[in-house]
Length: 278
Ligand code: DGL
Image 1: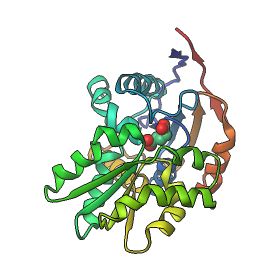
Image 2: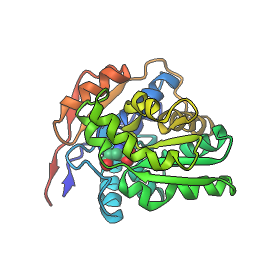
Image 3: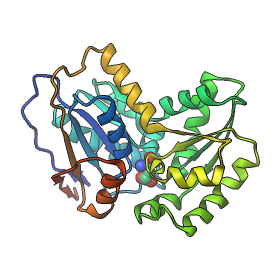
Image 4: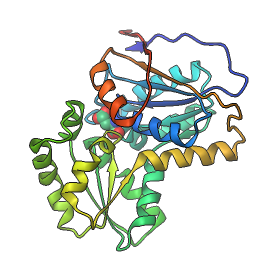
């Protein structure tokens, strides 16, 4: 399977920040970037033709992530932001080895934020099967704070519930209770929402875990890491006209419009990038 790429002329200010996700969930990172860095242009690609990545193998996730990264680089992206926990967990090193632009993921910023807010250093992590099986969060958290204990749980039913817009629904609440029960029994005081879809379910998750557990989402922390990296590389855009381009690999606009509304984004045209068998 391959993707059609058309190269655009280069931008004198260094091009957009290239952001991708397996689908629409990465727009939570885009919303945080738009708030923090309104001057930056963003080109977002959601691989809606091949979502979900969360149950796929490392080799497949690496291949898909490489193909989407090449689409962004063909548009002169000055940096790649992997706004997908699954891809960040399994393909980040692979991408960094191939491309010369900075490649940022969501795991490291999320892990750092969790350590910063946790008082008892008992940290829960939820994500897709692939993210949880990779132990990427466990490793990132323990590398920064050896005494931290990480309790993780794959929650494969949450992405479909979110994509159905079931944010306030007893089925969602029951599903969350079932998933989070074992983590709450471990006396966690912090829960990492280790999937870019999950911030859309923040209210429901907060209802289930209660006020004693602090929720950490990768979106805001990833945006701060992007700002930091741009400042260090002197690649901050000085013009005040950042724009947002959104492309999908399949026309699945229904959930896009739900996410747009919930996140307060203004997405006018959605481009369609062709996917072909090769
Ligand atoms: N965006 C993915 C993540 O953050 C979740 C959806 C999927 O399984 O592809 O892990």
